[in-house]
Image (cartoon, one colour):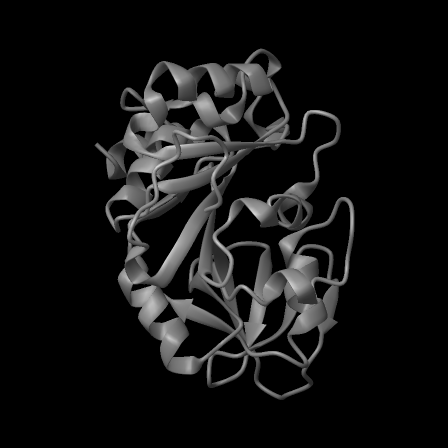
Length: 255
C-alpha cells in the first residue's frame, strides 16, 4: 500500500499481498432500518462491527494494510476507524462520498492505494467467513490465474458457472433466467460467490470500464481471454449479513 502520510507503516506483505480492500460503501438497502441512520459496516455481531470483524479476519493472515471505501454515512465509518486506531491495522479511506461506485468502480478508484506490483485482496464488509486465505492464495498461485475467488455449493439465486477445471465460464440468475456465457462449454457447474478475491496487479490495466460498475462485470468481460478461477471452500463458515435477520445466524457462527 502506498503511503498516505508520513506515519504510514510498511509491512512485510505476507502471502505476497500488497494490501487488501474491504468494500464498505454500499447503501445497505436490505439492512433497513439500521441503515436509515448508520452504515451497514458498523452493524454489530456479538459486540463487534462487521468492519472490525473483517479487519481482524485479514489480520489473521498478517494483512494490516487495508483500504476501506466509504459513501453511506461515510463520516461514521471514518470516526470509528480513528477512534479505534484501525483496530491495529493501517486503514486508508477511499472516499466515494460523491458517488457510490459499486465494487468494480470502487476497486479501480483505489488502485493507487495498493502497493504496485503485488497481489491484492478484496472482501465485502457484510460477508463473514473463515475461508483460509493461505489456501486461496496457494490455489491462485498454482493455477497462475489473473483472479481467483472463493465459491461454495450453497443455494442462492445468482451463480457463477465453471467448467470441470474450476475456470469461470459464465453467470446465471435462476430467478430471472438471465444468463451470460463467455466460454461456451457443456455441463457448466453452478457455484455461489463468496466475495473474497485475490487479484494480480495487472487487473488495473485490464479493467474495461470506468465510473460505476460491478466486479461481476469485470470477471465476465475478462474471463474469455484471461484465467479466472473459483476456489471451492464449501464447508467453511459463511454468512451473508446483508439482511438484519441474518445477524442471529452470524452470531451463532462467529462468537
